[in-house]
Picture (cartoon, rainbow, N blue to C red):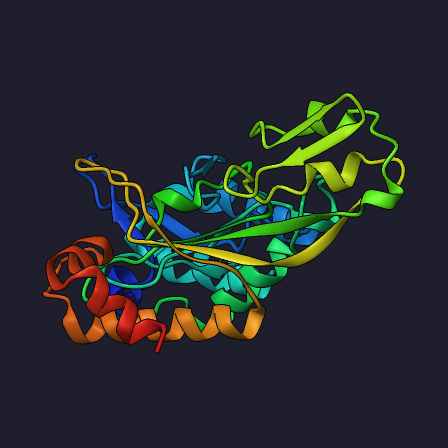
Length: 286
């Protein structure tokens, strides 16, 4: 195959990573949303990795996949075969990267939101969007934070604010045992709930046999400005328990702010810190 048929954009922007070998070998990053692949996609990957690589597929730290040891002359054919099997090309550089997500409430007993659905919507709207620097999303179903939303440029966490229904309560103490934040105390026929300690995990509601704990409010908690790497920083909790429309409005405005205010190569959290948190909040939450 003529190497000139492969466009620079398809290589550089599409998840091609040069390997350290002297030959022109590449690892090709693939687009995976929330770590989900079906059986047909897995078969396609297995066949393609054997045909064009060394029969290996690497799982990245962000639920992505890479086929390694691919020669430049085979890259176009590999991508075409992967796309025919429903496996799409990834991205790299200053763009929105693949979205990571847990199983959410469709599978996990502790899940409070459909994390996979939110991840798919973020991917559909923003994947590979050009930005001043790379931008990473994470969606986690509950405050257990399995997907580490605080370590991403924008993290989404499911949450539930409980409300105690006194007349339903038998004061069995199960909610106190289940609460990971020590926000509930049951003793001598009384119950005390400290909202300031509550982490919105919903464990009290899930375990209560009498339905004495009900949902007062549910939604999405948003973290912004997190990152790992050489200079890690936890993200800032921006809002608590917003609805889906508000969530996506915040995402849209955050990306607008980043495009408007960031310098080239500057990460989102560094932009917020330099410009000022209050100015960012005013722009995003107006």
